[in-house]
Length: 200
Ligand SMILES: [Zn+2]
Image (cartoon, rainbow, N blue to C red; front, side, top):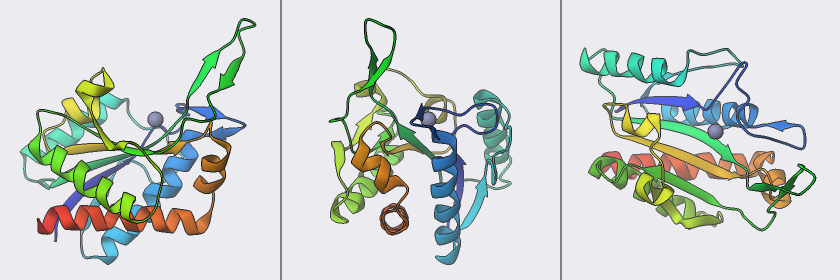
């Protein structure tokens, strides 16, 4: 049994990315709720940052709350998993956003300074690849390669990964992100990856 903190990225006033009337926060929540229930079924304990379309405290406050729990052992987290969906678009001469439709794929972001975070990202990327899900960057990317630091990964004490499940700007991937079977396969692959990391 392990203890995880899951985070459905964004929420409430913060929609995250948006494309074709789909809001990232809604997709993130769908996947995170399924992730929570499968992790629980496998005997793990989950604390989660939101269970509905709530307004949540800002990112740094959330990180601080997680760190307080972790430092006080109430509970100590084995890992944090933050769930997101991506967009790839550019602004054309008229100021309109145009999708880079060919860009697609899952990847897990981790901090290069965290060996555990890297191992967890590796383990999840391996399972997602095995499941036949399209990946980008070989399924994982460090924050150094990403070119920016992320609060979830750099401001939290427990090992953390941020999972970019897919691109809303790729029509096929946007369809898949709404597909029940694909959601199940994705969540099962992520949980298998987490279990392999824990059993190490
Ligand atoms: Zn996001």
